[in-house]
Length: 323
Image (cartoon, rainbow, N blue to C red):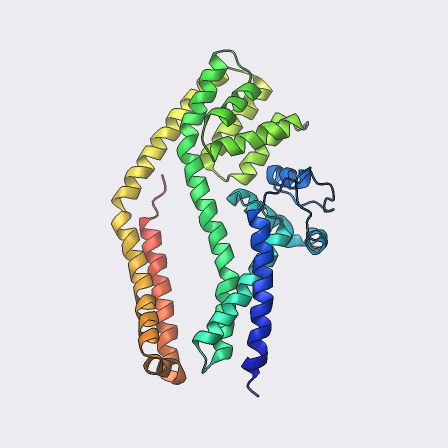
Protein backbone atom coordinates (compact mmCIF):
# COMPACT_ATOMS: atom_id res chain seq x y z
CA UNK A 1 0.00 0.00 0.00
CA UNK A 2 1.22 3.48 -0.85
CA UNK A 3 2.35 5.22 2.38
CA UNK A 4 0.77 8.44 1.12
CA UNK A 5 -2.66 6.91 1.61
CA UNK A 6 -2.05 6.70 5.36
CA UNK A 7 0.23 9.68 5.95
CA UNK A 8 -1.64 12.43 4.11
CA UNK A 9 -5.04 12.02 5.89
CA UNK A 10 -3.31 12.09 9.29
CA UNK A 11 -1.31 15.20 8.38
CA UNK A 12 -4.36 16.89 6.90
CA UNK A 13 -6.51 16.23 9.97
CA UNK A 14 -3.84 17.35 12.42
CA UNK A 15 -2.99 20.51 10.51
CA UNK A 16 -6.62 21.55 10.06
CA UNK A 17 -7.36 20.99 13.76
CA UNK A 18 -4.29 22.97 14.82
CA UNK A 19 -4.97 25.83 12.41
CA UNK A 20 -8.58 26.23 13.51
CA UNK A 21 -7.58 26.14 17.17
CA UNK A 22 -4.95 28.82 16.61
CA UNK A 23 -7.11 31.02 14.39
CA UNK A 24 -9.97 30.92 16.87
CA UNK A 25 -7.60 32.22 19.55
CA UNK A 26 -6.37 35.00 17.26
CA UNK A 27 -9.82 36.18 16.21
CA UNK A 28 -11.60 36.25 19.55
CA UNK A 29 -10.81 38.91 22.12
CA UNK A 30 -8.46 38.06 24.93
CA UNK A 31 -8.12 40.19 28.05
CA UNK A 32 -6.23 38.17 30.62
CA UNK A 33 -4.33 40.30 33.13
CA UNK A 34 -1.11 38.29 32.67
CA UNK A 35 -1.27 38.72 28.90
CA UNK A 36 -1.50 42.48 29.26
CA UNK A 37 1.45 42.48 31.63
CA UNK A 38 3.38 40.25 29.22
CA UNK A 39 2.73 42.71 26.39
CA UNK A 40 3.96 45.56 28.58
CA UNK A 41 7.12 44.00 29.93
CA UNK A 42 7.83 41.54 27.08
CA UNK A 43 8.30 38.79 29.64
CA UNK A 44 6.88 35.30 29.98
CA UNK A 45 5.12 34.29 33.15
CA UNK A 46 6.23 31.18 34.95
CA UNK A 47 2.66 30.38 35.87
CA UNK A 48 -0.24 30.56 33.43
CA UNK A 49 -3.24 32.53 34.66
CA UNK A 50 -6.57 31.04 35.51
CA UNK A 51 -8.51 34.20 36.28
CA UNK A 52 -10.68 35.51 33.47
CA UNK A 53 -12.56 38.73 33.16
CA UNK A 54 -16.30 38.69 32.73
CA UNK A 55 -17.42 38.01 29.17
CA UNK A 56 -14.29 36.11 28.12
CA UNK A 57 -14.58 32.61 26.83
CA UNK A 58 -12.54 29.92 28.65
CA UNK A 59 -9.08 29.02 27.38
CA UNK A 60 -8.56 25.38 26.42
CA UNK A 61 -6.67 23.59 29.16
CA UNK A 62 -4.14 22.29 26.62
CA UNK A 63 -3.11 25.88 25.79
CA UNK A 64 -2.77 26.78 29.48
CA UNK A 65 -0.65 23.67 30.14
CA UNK A 66 1.52 24.36 27.12
CA UNK A 67 2.03 27.95 28.29
CA UNK A 68 3.25 26.67 31.65
CA UNK A 69 5.62 24.20 30.02
CA UNK A 70 7.04 26.66 27.50
CA UNK A 71 7.56 29.36 30.15
CA UNK A 72 10.44 27.28 31.51
CA UNK A 73 12.19 27.07 28.14
CA UNK A 74 14.99 29.44 27.15
CA UNK A 75 13.47 30.41 23.79
CA UNK A 76 10.10 31.42 25.29
CA UNK A 77 11.29 34.86 26.40
CA UNK A 78 12.72 35.60 22.94
CA UNK A 79 9.47 34.56 21.26
CA UNK A 80 7.40 36.64 23.71
CA UNK A 81 9.61 39.67 23.03
CA UNK A 82 9.23 39.20 19.26
CA UNK A 83 5.45 38.93 19.61
CA UNK A 84 5.35 42.10 21.72
CA UNK A 85 7.50 43.97 19.19
CA UNK A 86 5.14 42.91 16.39
CA UNK A 87 2.11 43.76 18.59
CA UNK A 88 0.60 40.31 18.04
CA UNK A 89 -1.86 39.40 20.80
CA UNK A 90 -0.64 35.82 21.08
CA UNK A 91 0.96 33.80 23.83
CA UNK A 92 4.02 31.68 23.17
CA UNK A 93 1.91 28.51 23.21
CA UNK A 94 -0.53 29.89 20.64
CA UNK A 95 2.31 30.96 18.38
CA UNK A 96 3.89 27.50 18.64
CA UNK A 97 0.56 25.81 17.82
CA UNK A 98 0.04 28.07 14.81
CA UNK A 99 3.56 27.34 13.61
CA UNK A 100 3.00 23.59 13.92
CA UNK A 101 -0.23 23.88 11.97
CA UNK A 102 1.45 25.85 9.19
CA UNK A 103 4.29 23.32 9.07
CA UNK A 104 1.81 20.44 8.68
CA UNK A 105 -0.16 22.32 6.02
CA UNK A 106 3.05 23.12 4.12
CA UNK A 107 4.12 19.47 4.24
CA UNK A 108 0.77 18.36 2.82
CA UNK A 109 0.85 20.92 0.02
CA UNK A 110 4.44 20.02 -0.85
CA UNK A 111 3.62 16.30 -0.95
CA UNK A 112 0.64 16.90 -3.25
CA UNK A 113 2.58 19.21 -5.59
CA UNK A 114 5.54 16.82 -5.97
CA UNK A 115 3.86 13.43 -5.97
CA UNK A 116 6.74 11.62 -7.65
CA UNK A 117 9.10 12.67 -4.82
CA UNK A 118 6.50 13.34 -2.16
CA UNK A 119 8.97 12.99 0.71
CA UNK A 120 11.17 15.77 -0.66
CA UNK A 121 8.11 17.92 -1.35
CA UNK A 122 6.79 17.37 2.17
CA UNK A 123 10.15 18.27 3.74
CA UNK A 124 10.45 21.41 1.59
CA UNK A 125 6.88 22.44 2.45
CA UNK A 126 7.52 21.85 6.16
CA UNK A 127 10.68 23.98 6.04
CA UNK A 128 8.79 26.79 4.33
CA UNK A 129 6.02 26.47 6.91
CA UNK A 130 8.59 26.77 9.69
CA UNK A 131 10.20 29.86 8.14
CA UNK A 132 6.99 31.67 7.10
CA UNK A 133 5.77 32.71 10.62
CA UNK A 134 9.20 34.08 11.49
CA UNK A 135 9.36 36.04 8.26
CA UNK A 136 5.92 37.44 9.03
CA UNK A 137 7.11 38.44 12.50
CA UNK A 138 10.18 40.21 11.11
CA UNK A 139 8.17 42.05 8.44
CA UNK A 140 5.54 43.13 10.98
CA UNK A 141 8.22 44.31 13.39
CA UNK A 142 9.97 46.26 10.62
CA UNK A 143 6.78 48.02 9.54
CA UNK A 144 5.88 48.85 13.10
CA UNK A 145 9.39 50.15 13.82
CA UNK A 146 9.35 52.35 10.69
CA UNK A 147 5.94 53.75 11.60
CA UNK A 148 7.15 54.45 15.15
CA UNK A 149 10.28 56.22 13.93
CA UNK A 150 8.24 58.34 11.51
CA UNK A 151 6.03 59.53 14.40
CA UNK A 152 8.81 59.99 16.93
CA UNK A 153 9.80 63.52 15.86
CA UNK A 154 6.26 64.86 16.27
CA UNK A 155 5.91 62.93 19.53
CA UNK A 156 8.99 64.57 21.02
CA UNK A 157 7.72 67.99 19.96
CA UNK A 158 4.37 67.26 21.62
CA UNK A 159 6.16 66.16 24.81
CA UNK A 160 8.32 69.30 24.82
CA UNK A 161 5.35 71.64 24.31
CA UNK A 162 3.38 69.84 27.01
CA UNK A 163 6.26 70.13 29.48
CA UNK A 164 6.67 73.79 28.59
CA UNK A 165 2.99 74.44 29.34
CA UNK A 166 3.32 73.02 32.86
CA UNK A 167 2.38 69.36 32.55
CA UNK A 168 4.44 66.66 34.24
CA UNK A 169 6.25 63.99 32.24
CA UNK A 170 3.62 61.37 33.06
CA UNK A 171 0.79 63.69 32.05
CA UNK A 172 2.63 64.47 28.81
CA UNK A 173 3.00 60.76 28.02
CA UNK A 174 -0.69 60.23 28.75
CA UNK A 175 -1.47 63.01 26.26
CA UNK A 176 0.68 61.24 23.64
CA UNK A 177 -1.24 58.01 24.31
CA UNK A 178 -4.55 59.84 23.80
CA UNK A 179 -3.78 62.13 20.89
CA UNK A 180 -1.43 60.27 18.54
CA UNK A 181 -2.27 57.32 16.27
CA UNK A 182 -0.83 53.80 16.66
CA UNK A 183 1.78 52.51 17.14
CA UNK A 184 2.90 55.54 19.18
CA UNK A 185 -0.31 55.71 21.21
CA UNK A 186 -0.19 51.97 21.95
CA UNK A 187 3.40 52.01 23.16
CA UNK A 188 3.05 55.09 25.36
CA UNK A 189 -0.23 53.70 26.64
CA UNK A 190 1.70 50.63 27.81
CA UNK A 191 4.28 52.89 29.46
CA UNK A 192 1.63 54.84 31.40
CA UNK A 193 -0.16 51.64 32.43
CA UNK A 194 3.11 50.18 33.65
CA UNK A 195 3.85 53.29 35.70
CA UNK A 196 0.33 53.05 37.13
CA UNK A 197 1.16 49.52 38.30
CA UNK A 198 4.06 50.86 40.37
CA UNK A 199 7.01 50.65 37.96
CA UNK A 200 9.42 53.60 37.94
CA UNK A 201 9.56 55.97 34.99
CA UNK A 202 13.08 54.86 34.06
CA UNK A 203 12.21 51.18 34.09
CA UNK A 204 9.01 51.72 32.11
CA UNK A 205 10.91 53.70 29.46
CA UNK A 206 13.62 51.04 29.34
CA UNK A 207 10.91 48.43 28.74
CA UNK A 208 9.67 50.60 25.88
CA UNK A 209 13.16 50.64 24.42
CA UNK A 210 13.34 46.85 24.71
CA UNK A 211 10.14 46.57 22.66
CA UNK A 212 11.11 49.27 20.14
CA UNK A 213 14.78 48.93 19.20
CA UNK A 214 15.25 52.44 17.83
CA UNK A 215 18.38 54.56 18.09
CA UNK A 216 16.30 57.74 18.06
CA UNK A 217 14.14 56.48 20.90
CA UNK A 218 17.29 55.51 22.80
CA UNK A 219 18.50 59.10 22.49
CA UNK A 220 15.23 60.47 23.84
CA UNK A 221 15.07 58.03 26.77
CA UNK A 222 18.72 58.71 27.65
CA UNK A 223 17.99 62.44 27.78
CA UNK A 224 14.96 61.89 30.04
CA UNK A 225 16.93 59.61 32.39
CA UNK A 226 19.83 62.09 32.60
CA UNK A 227 17.39 64.91 33.31
CA UNK A 228 15.88 62.82 36.12
CA UNK A 229 19.34 62.50 37.71
CA UNK A 230 20.86 65.97 37.20
CA UNK A 231 17.92 68.21 36.30
CA UNK A 232 17.83 70.90 33.60
CA UNK A 233 15.41 72.20 30.99
CA UNK A 234 13.99 69.01 29.52
CA UNK A 235 11.72 70.78 27.02
CA UNK A 236 14.66 72.49 25.29
CA UNK A 237 16.61 69.22 25.17
CA UNK A 238 13.63 67.43 23.64
CA UNK A 239 13.20 70.23 21.08
CA UNK A 240 16.80 69.75 19.94
CA UNK A 241 16.42 65.98 19.78
CA UNK A 242 13.12 66.28 17.91
CA UNK A 243 14.68 68.54 15.28
CA UNK A 244 17.56 66.10 14.80
CA UNK A 245 15.18 63.15 14.43
CA UNK A 246 12.93 64.96 11.94
CA UNK A 247 15.93 65.84 9.79
CA UNK A 248 17.14 62.24 9.91
CA UNK A 249 13.69 60.98 8.89
CA UNK A 250 13.63 63.45 6.01
CA UNK A 251 17.06 62.37 4.76
CA UNK A 252 16.12 58.69 5.07
CA UNK A 253 13.00 59.34 3.00
CA UNK A 254 15.04 60.99 0.26
CA UNK A 255 17.52 58.10 0.25
CA UNK A 256 14.66 55.57 0.12
CA UNK A 257 13.23 57.40 -2.89
CA UNK A 258 16.57 57.52 -4.73
CA UNK A 259 17.30 53.82 -4.11
CA UNK A 260 13.77 52.52 -4.77
CA UNK A 261 14.58 51.37 -8.31
CA UNK A 262 17.58 49.34 -7.16
CA UNK A 263 15.62 47.76 -4.31
CA UNK A 264 12.74 46.68 -6.53
CA UNK A 265 15.21 45.42 -9.13
CA UNK A 266 16.60 43.12 -6.45
CA UNK A 267 13.13 41.85 -5.64
CA UNK A 268 12.34 41.20 -9.30
CA UNK A 269 15.65 39.45 -9.99
CA UNK A 270 15.08 37.20 -6.97
CA UNK A 271 11.39 36.40 -7.47
CA UNK A 272 11.20 36.18 -11.27
CA UNK A 273 13.14 32.88 -11.71
CA UNK A 274 11.09 31.21 -8.97
CA UNK A 275 7.82 32.47 -10.47
CA UNK A 276 8.77 31.29 -13.97
CA UNK A 277 9.81 27.87 -12.63
CA UNK A 278 6.51 27.55 -10.75
CA UNK A 279 4.53 28.52 -13.85
CA UNK A 280 6.38 25.98 -15.99
CA UNK A 281 5.83 23.33 -13.31
CA UNK A 282 2.07 23.95 -13.38
CA UNK A 283 1.93 23.99 -17.19
CA UNK A 284 4.21 21.00 -17.78
CA UNK A 285 4.84 18.88 -14.72
CA UNK A 286 6.63 16.13 -16.64
CA UNK A 287 8.97 18.59 -18.35
CA UNK A 288 10.02 20.33 -15.11
CA UNK A 289 10.30 17.12 -13.07
CA UNK A 290 13.33 16.10 -15.12
CA UNK A 291 15.20 18.99 -13.57
CA UNK A 292 15.38 17.35 -10.13
CA UNK A 293 15.40 13.75 -11.34
CA UNK A 294 18.79 14.23 -12.98
CA UNK A 295 21.89 14.89 -10.79
CA UNK A 296 23.02 17.64 -13.15
CA UNK A 297 19.65 19.35 -12.76
CA UNK A 298 19.95 19.29 -8.98
CA UNK A 299 23.39 20.90 -9.24
CA UNK A 300 21.94 23.58 -11.50
CA UNK A 301 19.16 24.29 -8.98
CA UNK A 302 21.69 24.57 -6.14
CA UNK A 303 24.00 26.91 -8.07
CA UNK A 304 21.06 29.07 -9.20
CA UNK A 305 19.71 29.33 -5.64
CA UNK A 306 23.11 30.33 -4.25
CA UNK A 307 23.60 32.90 -7.03
CA UNK A 308 20.15 34.42 -6.48
CA UNK A 309 20.73 34.65 -2.74
CA UNK A 310 24.15 36.27 -3.13
CA UNK A 311 22.79 38.73 -5.69
CA UNK A 312 19.96 39.72 -3.36
CA UNK A 313 22.43 40.20 -0.47
CA UNK A 314 24.74 42.36 -2.61
CA UNK A 315 21.89 44.58 -3.80
CA UNK A 316 20.60 44.99 -0.24
CA UNK A 317 24.04 45.99 1.01
CA UNK A 318 24.45 48.53 -1.80
CA UNK A 319 21.12 50.30 -1.15
CA UNK A 320 21.35 50.10 2.66
CA UNK A 321 22.78 53.54 3.38
CA UNK A 322 23.16 54.45 7.06
CA UNK A 323 22.22 57.97 8.13
